[in-house]
Image (cartoon, rainbow, N blue to C red):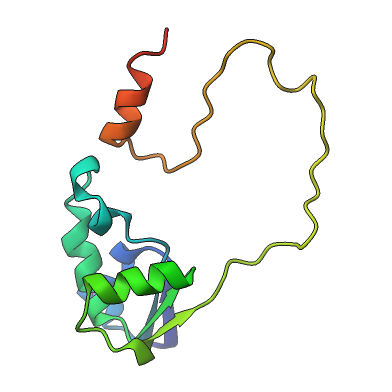
Length: 131
């Protein structure tokens, strides 16, 4: 069975030839170029070849920002800009956040906003923390 379009939101999904070959058109969403931009701080540098293969084989590429698109075209100059579109993530215009000072603990804390994969930078930040 084939489909008209396969949309991969993670680059590894397009690198499995047996899976991608069943689809007539492929679309890849690129969220950022962090592996390519800062390879020295990522312990998952092996992702770069997987992502390169996915980017070069996708029929269409969606980027989540204009910055990501420009980075993509810089790191992969063989890609035609006509294959790349920017589609911003959807969000409401008015944030629906209520403030409650009792929710935030009064003692020092560390808030990390990022991926689950440990990077050298994150590990370095956590080393001086107690516990």
